[in-house]
Length: 239
Image (cartoon, rainbow, N blue to C red; front, top):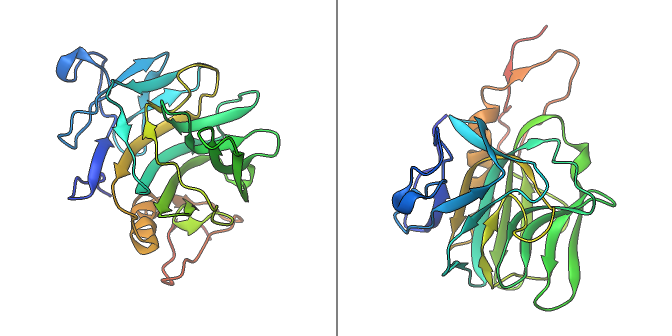
């Protein structure tokens, strides 16, 4: 396994390997490794073990990691990906992974049915439902991605498309990671968050999701998944 890398399409990349706050340029807390300066200021988070190195526990109600203005602008083509630990933080209405100052939530879970999707505040059309029930996930680390490509957004869990693509793209910005900057919508424990200015292909997302799964111990009597490339993404040690 290796951490995600910065390439020509990377807008921001937070490895979250800090061992204390106030260590990034300008004295802020969560360092952007892209070179574009999108460092984040944490509110009510904790440094914890991540999927690789350290991560952030963003579970405390209004907890979030907030970027400074000018915020990270999105176009109609982008990819947001991260590792997260299930179960999510026990919020009342929603869990937000990314939220824009312009209003949209690019990745959000609606708690009433635990469906994954986005939330359109700008166009006032509300929750954009993939139909994917995130509460079916096993406990532990999972990879999540949202890929916007012009007029649709497709969501992925562990490199596999999650539910149906939605006919909506957030083209505003990203201001907060791991929660909402105004109300209690914390996501939970996160690591390796990357925002890109391209629509990363599903094959690449499968590779990114496979990094940790290649070394995940297999427990006898549980299920595992064989992906489209016919590679078993577990390290089987049972009988």
